[in-house]
Length: 269
Image (cartoon, rainbow, N blue to C red; front, side):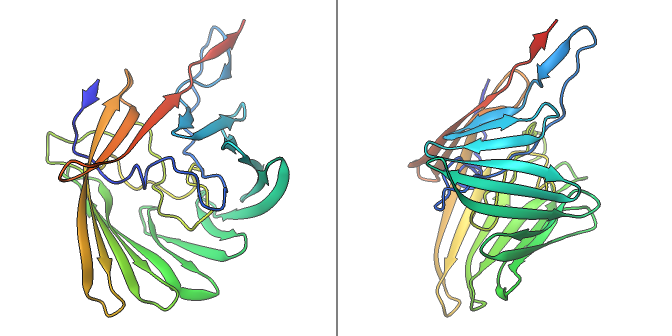
């Protein structure tokens, strides 16, 4: 089913571009499905391909590997700790540790930099910053969506290491009656470089698919340099999950088109 939902620049943000450092992002791990009459060896409905990224899971449904052409990350789980070992051309190249709170949310990540993550009372990410240079940060604001009962990500503000505002992103999700439920939420590509957005440890950002994004860029003196609006459209599968995300600038130039594939169940009788 194709939906011309004028959507968001979440495909660059929501998209499947390989990180510059070849680290592997992180995916939401949906609930495994059970069949009383058979033993399921792979849960149905897990995201297994997001553009150029291939994802594989443990039998429990927890993310195991994030795979690119010449690089992959493998995730190792311990109580309130996830360790991601990154490999490039078969050689260990990086290690990232995610510290979780009692609710399973990431409160600190450590690789070559240490980042701290803060949440609101609803468990939504409100801020992350560099522990050694708190000026380097991103602030997340939420607004009640058109449904009137859930708060969705509305604004993200970027600050560099000197504390200068460099960019702001604004998101909308559609009017009442035009909302498209997000049946498979993935953390938007707004985390620090090299931090996996496919791990479901950063809270829920919205319950609906983004339909527009406005990107404002700023000069060092605080003056707005430019403003660009992006529109999103989606093709949905039979379960209502996005199987293609296309992003265009408001005047029609295509920015990206990302295909997604979800797993089907397999059985051992």
